[in-house]
Image (tube, rainbow, N blue to C red; front, side, top):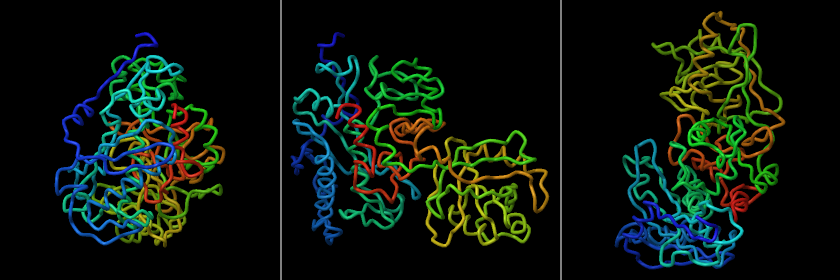
Length: 481
């Protein structure tokens, strides 16, 4: 393929889009770019739901369908005011049933319907660009009549069996309480459709139709020292699960990162005369409750809580006298499961622990963060992997009732930004095992403040895609926006 030849790839998602009946454009953002929301729902469903509702949080719609549309257009306006393109960006959207359980749910999904390569001078040759970005760079619609983004959102959220009782908040003021802020979810999913993703498979390492994505030119594996564009398929497979070792090299993100992310990445360091081979630094997930880890570390002997028949320690109820004696003045090691993380922290704190480490109960790395709220918690907490928990428990087998000789240091690496590598490059999400749909095409969950394009929506996010709140638009500038 020569550099003057236009190449196009229509994904399976795009093919499905073409089979849907479009119900007409429903509004647009008048700004540097124009985003049009197109309704793909049938009568009485989704955007067409006639259920009466009261106005909420600046959303004046009088039916459920109208309020959904207004929230969609509000998110489109935010992106429209940020991007620059003389080609209309059409977002085909619908509310449909998505995967659900009572304890969790897929909120939504979105992506580019087509990708293009070799469509304009000055771009990276033989490289895929998402539809909307390709149109912007070409200055023309490369496939007229086809929507650039397909978006689907969960119509059942909050109903029995689908994250029971937790609904989409349709207000525009981000005052969502314990519900899920729809505008934030929309900004995230539209971001994917606009180009926040690679089209190279992390599971197989294979590029799409033999060509890399523009993303692949900016992703560097810190173990191999290679960019994805220069790797073999097998090397990309390994890199996609190389926890906290895949970094974004784009100049706009790297230059802006110090003004967005906080200095000081969470750190657990283990030492002590009984630590043996467990000595070293550990990957951790931070807690949304209690004080953040700071430059003044919390240091104490590590002592396990044991309160279950299998020898684990759940700390879901007030600690027994023996467990309370063990953790008093020390750092408590507990197991994930049965109750919320904040409940565990409250119970070990009441027993006198100065910190808490939660060992995961399923395999995987890096350890995710811990959700929950409890303003009474004043001790720091971190989460570690199941494998690391097993390693530490092995060293604690020879402990006495009040001493272990294994020292836990809960603090931060003050020279490293939370969400960046040691060289100040933003980290991408590379859990092991791989998580299709989430791996690589998101920021790492250790980023702080939380970023819009992490794999899960955090409740403290602002309705912003630009610095100093967020790095999303900086990445977009790196790839051509």
